[in-house]
Image 1: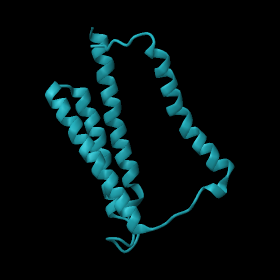
Image 2: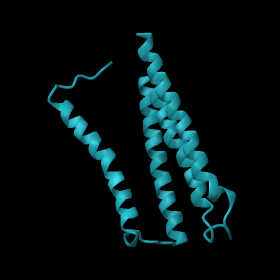
Image 3: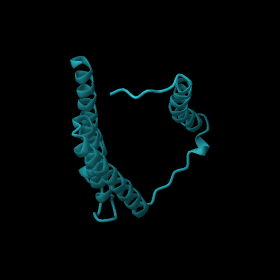
Image 4: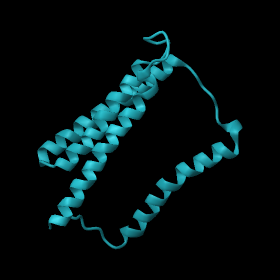
Length: 139
């Protein structure tokens, strides 16, 4: 089920992809070239709430994608929803274990919560990609 795109939209897609790839690199270059621009900000309660809100948004997106996967009976889409949900769970664990908010000091959950969650999310994303490749080879 490939979507048809008129030939005129193809160059636009390349430009959009290029912008999405170049902008983060320009930001990194700016921070490395001008260290005074890199502002240090450390406020644990704000960190907790920011992480909790982002994790909540990920849960909402994951549930919406999961519902779309159920309606379409699409295993690949379900795995994409698991990317959002698994990363949200560990990201929320990271936020809950923010030092001096709910706990007295740093914990293992604060230190490795993000890495474990993103690794699990990457496994789901990889599985989704392999399902896509397998489906194309079956045609």
